[in-house]
Length: 153
Image (cartoon, rainbow, N blue to C red; front, side, top):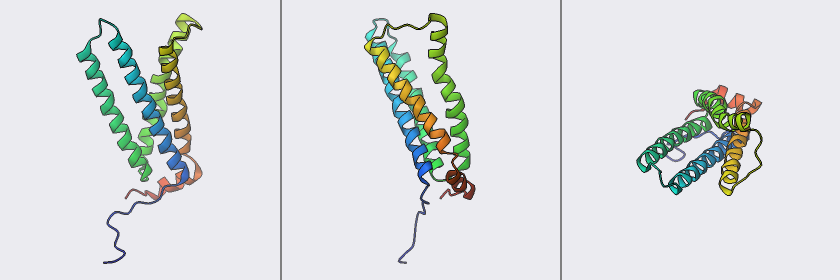
């Protein structure tokens, strides 16, 4: 029984590891932004704590599902790669960009920066940039070869 492998896990290419790291950074930035927004909301006297807790619970569930899909992607699951590309690359980026672009269109360019808005802006920028690194990394030639093999263990 020597040499028996119970769980075979193929080594993913560097680009797939980069994509996974990008998605994890995006998740961490999203969690940071959610917590920062929650803290800012709790700072107001009219904060609805049960509603805030429910919103955080939903976000937490979504982040856990996304993390599970990222893990599947690192194992060569093509459907996970597609779900990440469509879900985070299109819908996720759109949701991250709509709010600031709408504010820019309606309020114009406002240079009044508060520590709170700076924190949220930095977290949002990290989130967007991490996704913009991760999505193309999943479609490099070595990644395409890896996913074509269906490396899921």
